[in-house]
Length: 407
Image 1 (cartoon, rainbow, N blue to C red):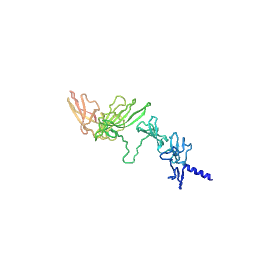
Image 2: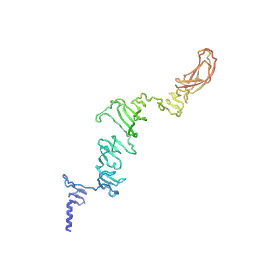
Image 3: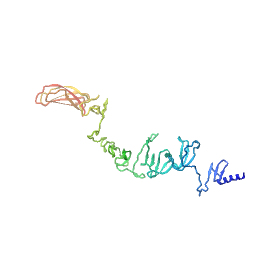
Image 4: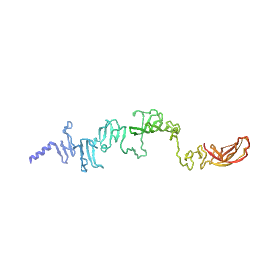
C-alpha cells in the first residue's frame, strides 16, 4: 500500500498537476486560473514539446459525429476533397451538420492555376464555391482565377441584385476621372466614362460583342459635364462593334447615325431589302384624329395637321370626323369666248386655306376646256373652267368630284 501511494505521488510530481478545491486543473503550475490551466516549461525559452496535441487525422470519420460531439476538434493532416489541412470542429447545429474550419484558417494562402498568389475562404470552398482575393487585388466568386477586378462565375444563377428599403433607391455608379485617384482632374475630350459590356464565345474564343457606353461629349469644365450615350451591337459576319443608337448632350438621337443633327436622325436608306430608314406596320387608324399623328392602314399613309384634319399624304382623298370629305357638285359653265374663265364656289366642310385640292369631271368635257380647283376660303373650294380655244363653246353643266387634300 505504501509503495502504491508513492507511485501516485511520483506521477503527480512528474506532470506537476495541481487540483484546486473547485476542481480547477493546473498543468505545470500550482495556481490554475481556469478549469484547465497549462503552463509552458518557460515562456521565454519554451521547449519543443510545450503545447497541446489535438487528435490528428488524415480523413474525417466515415460515420459522422452527433450532438454529443458538438464542438469536438480535430486536426486534418492533409487536403481532402472539400476540406484543407488544418484545425476543424464538428458543428452539429447547422442545417447540415459538418466539419468547419477554425479561426484564422478561414482564409488560407494558396496559388491558382495561373500561378497567382491568393487567399481563399475555406468554408466557401468546402461547399464547392471558390471565394478568393489575389495578391494583385482581383476578387473572384465561383472562380479562383478571376480575369477582371471583380468576377462572378457559376454554371447557374449569377444575377446581381442590389436591394434597398430606403426612399433613396439603390444605384449602380460608374465613376471615371482624369489625373489620378489621389489628384482627380477632367477626363480627356470625348473620353469614355464607363460601360456595361457583354461578351460571348464564338466557338473559337471569347468576344466582346456589344454594350452600353457613356462618354464625355466634348470637354468637361467646372460647371459643365456634357455627356453622350451609345449602344453598340455587332453585325452578322463580323466581330467589330458598330454604334446603333447615339444620344448627344443636346438630346439629339441618332439611329445608326453617329452624329445626329436633329431630335431624331435616321440613317440613309438603301436599295437592299430591309434597309429603309423608316417603315410603319399597317394597323387601324385612330377613331378620333390626334394632331401630329402619322398613321398607316395598309393602303394609305395619313397625317393629322394642327387643326385636327386627317389627310392622305400626297393622295387623292381625305377622311376625318372633323375634316374635309369628297364632294360631288354639278357645275354650270358658260365660257363662250376664247380665254374666258368661269368659276364656282363649292361648300366642303373642313376645307382650309393651305390645303390643296383635287377635282375631276365625271364625264368628258367639250374639247378645248380645262379645269382646276383651289381652296379660296374656309369650307369653300373654287372650281374653275377655262376656254383656251378660238371658238365658242356652248354653255352646259357637268358634275365634278372634289377633294381637299394636304400636300
